[in-house]
Image (cartoon, rainbow, N blue to C red; front, side):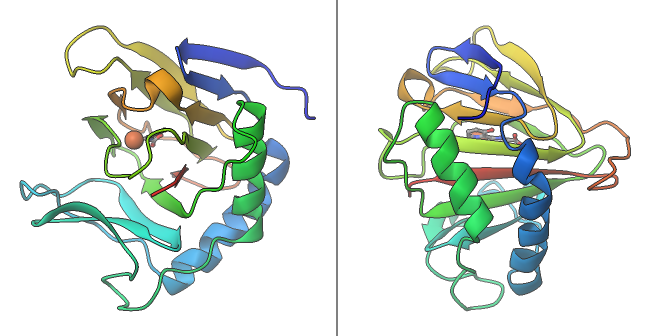
Length: 206
Ligand code: MD6
Ligand code: FE
């Protein structure tokens, strides 16, 4: 197993620092492949606000949002085709990360890919559109760093903050699975592998 430093954010939420570093370049190539089939796109929330990050998915289903709500769909509404299959590097990092965090049978069927550009952010939210909250979410950060915060089960209350940097893996399960969390604005910068952007992969069992 790869030696890795771990930070516990809250009960059930742990950062495995640099855990995806050895596979980061492969993941970035695979993101390009997915995006060439199901392009990154802007979506609106049910209230009609545009989200600033651009997103797409791979796997057997994909997370979508529009005026009708948040949900998972088998087909990409942009291409009207199935989402691209999850590439091998994605499967490998998800399984390895689940295992290191105590979920040896982790088998996500969805990966949501978010791309942030400077100024983009994601407000406090819960990930609660999945059908099995016993399974964790594995989140991989690539490219520019961002400030991540996580609180508890209500929107109010204190939050813990950490910078997620290139190669970090966050596993979010158990008592943290429905915790409110979000990221601050992406700051200007230049990353040798991603330029002026950050990618976040979140693996889910939908
Ligand atoms: C992000 N992450 O890092 C946003 N959700 O860009 C998330 O919304 C997230 O990191 C669920 C579990 C882990 C996460
Ligand atoms: Fe989330």
